Image (cartoon, rainbow, N blue to C red; front, side):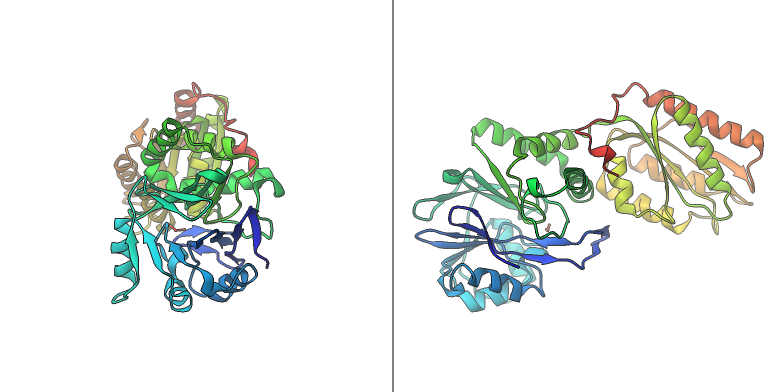
Length: 408
Ligand code: FEO
């Protein structure tokens, strides 16, 4: 691939990972990119590096712009290994004058790279680094996505280098938002938000407030993953505002697994009841749907309904998996219910209820259990449960948050 000049004197020099499909439990069905940016001024600065295994790509791209040995400074906006995996090799090659990071960044770098003697220079929120014609202002963004995280703002070019924030996992030869299909772009941005940023939504609200109050003008957001925002800067900021406020719409997600089809029959009947109330419903069978797509669908859904048969006095493994994953991502403001079939013990529904309660989901029902195979009367009860859920959420607005919901 080629280095791309994204602003005058600012080049994308990162790497494209066409192959990655699992990003700590997140299905990256379209791969990803590890973006790095090279700014050439009186001082030459590299912002972030790439994941281990992509050193040659990074150096190849830098070399298209300048001699890697000309790099004076490296800025580490975020220490997670997809951005610093090759940092030791880069520092060995470049021998930079300084490596800038946050105070937490220094701790994390030394924890990941024991015994190194790098010229680390800690910067704090609001610190400015003069490069020549440009300057960099550092913006601490703790927990977006790790405690060390910060962003770099180049005011003279209205450019925000935003590390994980505003990213998407999508390997493309295109580099800009206006060069790709918008439905896929917003789906991937939403999926990324739901799977990476969601637990830190309060921090996003604070960041957006800080940006608003500071009056800084941004006309390009360059994240460390995926496409660079140059056409839709205001729109993606607005999406982040909505997503971080966890705005929901008139929609329910039913996520379930099934053993001998009984719980699937129940799921379909619950969906019918929800639909009867004029509410959009997504049926997600965990045998064919990945946990990271469940949380993406759930993000704007008001209701979460979970079904599991009882297996060995417990949950079906995929249901336990998705409950653990969802709990960690802390979706807020949901109502829900549990259902499932059983043969003798019937513990699964109680366990799902416990999982939903731990997630602060407001339960609308004690949980619906069916022995072995649902009868017509049982299915009618499932429809009733669906109607109850539907009537509880049909006071929400229609699902039209920028139309992204319709992307898939
Ligand atoms: Fe892209 Fe939190 O690393």
